[in-house]
Amino acid sequence: MRKDAQARRDQLIVAAAELFEQHGYGVALEAVAERAGVGRGTLYRNFADRNAMIVAVLEKRLDELALFIKENVDSPTLFEDFVRRQGVVAAFHTKALVNAENGALNRVIISLRERADALMGTVLEGAIALGRISAHITITDMRIVNRMLIAAATMPEMDPNDALERALAILLAGLAPS
Image (cartoon, rainbow, N blue to C red):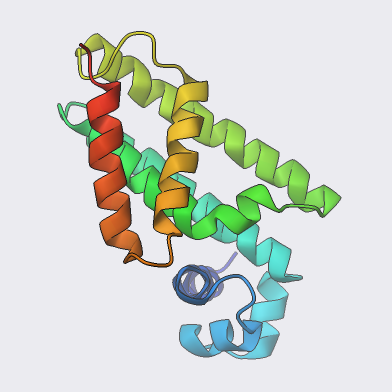
């Protein structure tokens, strides 16, 4: 792919992520093109449909999490920081993760979940080795933690970011070794 074409695709993914996180997945794709500063033709050359764009956004977020781990592998707070970041991603993209009914999209979402689990496994092992969390915590436990963070972020009576921070503090205290 040419550099300029890749740059436009990247602009579309960034714009889609911002709009999906602000307004949900029902946002008009034309609004994504407008935010990215490209035409509808460019949008549809890069993404056949909304599902393709959703997958690209989720892949980008996982790439960002993987890079975050790589850049912070020696940080004593990697676990807490990773859970916070992953919780935010999950909270804003939960509809795609939970409601994937389209067969092809569902297969991709399962693959993305597996990738997210692998990232979490790496971080979890390090946190256990450092004594940051109890040794009995598993990936399944962390999936439950993610669902709790999603629930907190979707409480209508609270600001989503405040709710996430509060829930995260409670959950991290519960995950700590006795």
